[in-house]
Amino acid sequence: MYRKVGTYIFPHKLCGGTRELLERGEQITFTECNKLREWVATAMLITMDIVNIMKSKASAHARLMKETEEKQDAAAERAQASSLKAARKALNRVVLYVTDLHGAGGLERLLWEEEKFFRQKGVEMIVLTFSFDKSALYDYQPHLEIIEAGSSRLSRALALRRKLRELNPDLVIAQSHGCAMYLYLATLFTPIPYAVHVHGTFFWAPEDRYKYALVFRRVFSKIRESVAGHKEFVPPYPHNGLKKRIASEFLAILNYLAIRRAQKTIVLTEQVRWEVEKLYGKDSVIARGCLPSEALNYQPKQNIRQRLGLEGQRIIFNVGRLDPLKRIDLLIKACAKIFPQYPDVYLVIGGTGEDEERLKGLAEELGIKERVKFVGFISDPELFDYHAACDVFAFPSWTTSGISPYEALAVNKKVVWTTEADEPVLGDKHVFLAHPTVEDFAKGLEKALNTPVEGEIDLSDYTWDRYFETVYNAAIEAVNRQ
Image (tube, rainbow, N blue to C red; front, side, top):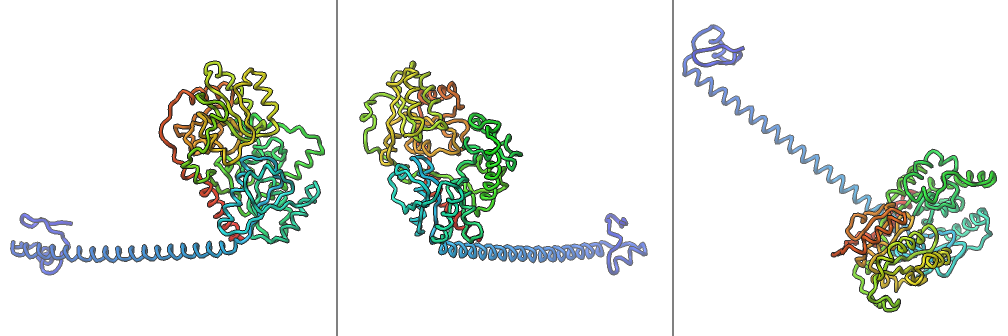
């Protein structure tokens, strides 16, 4: 309520004599009004002081809370660092297990680089396998032991179990989900932990029948439809007899249990991480990187063009294991389409494998035998010289992640990559995407040949050191989880 007094309006509820005068309805002099205004002003100042004091206290409390939280965070970080330090001390001996070592390819190179990186960290490294081909070594000299065992899964699992109990490692790292199945049996009811590299689920391996098992049936169609190569190479229905079907069901359950029991799963791409989550309900660590640091500033040591007799010509290059999943036949057919318009272009194919004779026959059948050069196995010291000699690197492979395209990019070469790829560098100007068909890949090759590209691509985040630092940290966490 308010009352009007002269030309002023005052609150009805005031204090002291002024309030009494108002209640009697008496006139208030201007002197009294001035006093009243002074009183109100004083009261407002006092109120503001109280508010400021409260704000100051609240601010001080907030600062104190923030400082307390920062101290707690710092203490947690020190505790975590101390824990990691303790774990590193415990990571003295690590076994890398791969069931078979046959041929020279990206997976074998990954294995040896992992062995070398951990060894440089001061970890004793031992590589275990049941069978071995000397070509798989490249130029590495690891501590490799071949386990003697029969051919059956049970005899191998028991032999591996005996060997692991003898070595007593801090951690075993399986090189694939198939290897993990042996490890699961070999480490069952033991304190030995293991981690697993899942470079690709069994959807990336047509011969694996586990994908058709009942335990994975609920996600089969969804995963098969997610990648063009899955639809191309993976039949929608299995072609197994009853006996094989029963065996596959049992092995699929074993596979499921093996991955579920792993302390850590390590994958290369988001696609494989998604597949692992769908199949096993398990999250994975993504590790990227595949280049030696020296490759980022590589200078050629020999003239490959001169050696091949291709000086003044343009070269499309591919290197890797020669098998049907690499789609080298698609590349040869795509080249046959564009060669008539590009008489100065040659295809150079490096590597060996089961598909070699068929591919040579295909080149002859298409009438381009003289313009397709199979150079065989390429050693590590020469590999980047071949990359540096080419104009375009072609990578039509159905694979989760390729090493060789990164090697070509490291020396600033143009790369034609399939649209199936799941790599962070696909948006770079050096990369030309093409669907994995003859027609579209031929267009991709033409576009790459005709498009000038200047400048370098920054690949400093994709070295072996970055990749294996992630793997090493995952190994430490795996040991800590015990």
